[in-house]
Length: 75
Image (cartoon, rainbow, N blue to C red):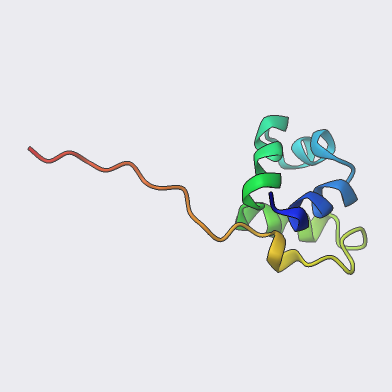
């Protein structure tokens, strides 16, 4: 679990509020609590919730690993 991501999400009003802000479904935001917030979403949240996020470690809340891409079978 990425406790920093969970703090960011809680500071912005919780899973449902962040999902509405980002235009995604709540289960996606719940996944962010485990894996970290995707970089593009974090940039958006920084702009929309600047005052609410003061003092939080946004770098640590940002996901660092990428989703593995599908391999293309050659044959």
